[in-house]
Image 1 (cartoon, rainbow, N blue to C red):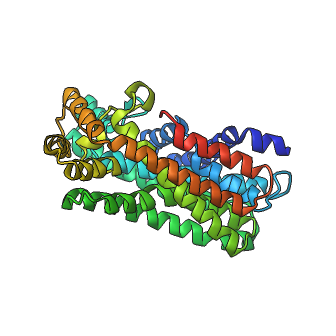
Image 2 (cartoon, rainbow, N blue to C red):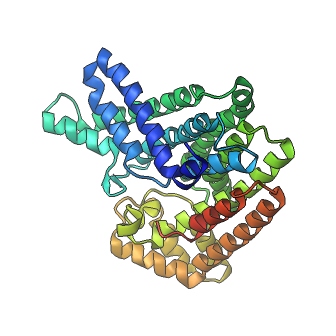
Image 3 (cartoon, helix red, strand yellow):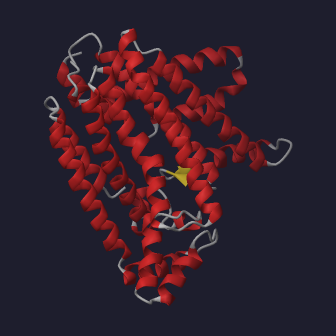
Length: 363
């Protein structure tokens, strides 16, 4: 495939690589045990049914920026290695929906809800919710196992794969550590700004931007200095990405985001938006506004009207504006790091486009 085919049609190529791998892997196990077909199909639909493909895109442009040749013999292998990141993302999202008791994602029932319904419709023994929970855990685990398989099977030189494995290992560990920190913070009630930013760095920045860039650059044989600069860029951009997500979780349009507004509040997430709302409310002596915010955190039955009151309280103390300023600051420092990286063209322009998409998006 020519260079424009990979660079210009990267999402389509990622979809192709994923569909080919999922088809092979699914048929192999279904020949042995046909009863698992619904789980295999559910994973395939989840992975191929939408998503921004940010992680493979950052990995690809990390590789291209570090000198990777899209017309060379390694391009297809790099595409497969980059696409495998979507299976880690699938694992994280399926398990995240379960942990958060979310009913919908991208406008459709979450995996555990769909399998609970299947159990109920079939009139099987036991509790539908228990079957849905177990199915989601196992399907998420399968996604993680297949991510390793897809990455390891990439047709790339042994030296390139060896160079990339530290990024791969770190990414898997960091996203799980970030998820645990998120759960622990909800349990302990730590609503500090510092805790929110630690979660943002581990749970989002590291595995959404930093490590994919690290992975791609390593596959191209990048030096440590370049990787360090890309990690700096990715850390700031990744946190900015999550802060935009936090704002959309409360102020976004559900018809655009695909998730009900206020779900972060219902799930008890201590986002930076919430942390700043409580901090600014205390500083300004606006105890009523701070009380509205505090009372809403973790209230599973929070109504749409109550969510609107939280929006008003957050706006009253200036929390959304403070988060917007933080996004602007992180975007500025990320762009400064990108300039220092001196990446090969057209990577700087493409990564700049991704900065805009990540920080200005509406979904």
